[in-house]
Image 1: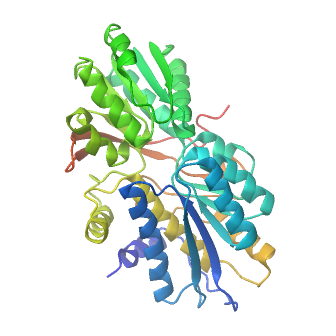
Image 2 (image 1 turned 180 degrees about the horizontal axis):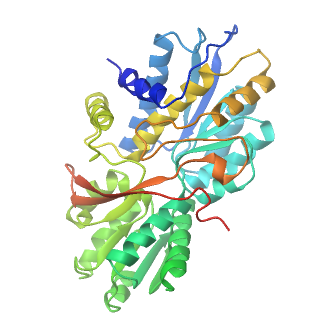
Image 3 (image 1 turned 45 degrees about the vertical axis):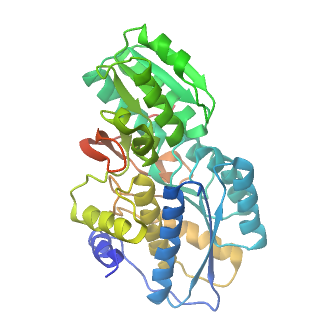
Length: 398
């Protein structure tokens, strides 16, 4: 039995109805551009395609099939934009999904806004994505503006306020550092004890860690993509910084390469994310087992859960779209159907809702973050849920 069947029961119970609409004589074209350079990236990309295949095998969208194209942008903005342009202008997709990396998603927003194509964001957290004023963008994951508040509150109240910052140059990490710094200053009146701005794929953190070691800090924030973060964590211990100095991860800490590469250095790292494999809800246990059985992934992170929720939200919206055969009109109708999704409860840390206004309040769908800690690193890593926090919809906005 597909997990979708169990999941959809909860969706309908939450008040999200499916209205039958007339079929039209064409495929519904969906383009997907994502980072698929890791085992996890390849797996959740394949999971999305498998779930779309499952929709088609169950009758499609009111009798019409979804024709999905999946492209790898390698987390490179030029490739992501090229992929988007190809799918939007040549393949004439009805809907674009992408991307995994904020640095790729940000310029793609301009492509879809100009072309009038609805865009669903599966993973990117940079808060600027929904602040560009596009009426075509919808974000499924938790925005970085919420993550910063949750992290800062927990750190200041439980760890201390003397924090060193390691900030990688990718857009998500830049945003995570900026949001954390802003919230620590607003809540506790403190600036970073130390800040290092490093390359996106930095490999040598030794000089920074030696400086941090001499400063007697309470914690180290490492905001970077997974592999870079893992290297920084390992080198922090190699520099002699003890476990009494807490390691704080950006949302990328939820990605499996972090505990796998960092090993014992991942133990004790905590971070905010939109899903925890340690979630004890029945739907989460079903999902974890499905991902392990299908793709051999020990513990799916929030990139998996967000990709899965996105497909379900897409399905709801498409089934509520009255297709006419006019590409421009159908794109607009899909956009409006996504905007009408309210209170979707799937794997996400909190309910996902959208609305019509082209504002972050309407287009950042999930406001609830989960605070998670690693209790064990390595291949068979383990996590625990520390807290679940819902923020006000306008939190973090100027």
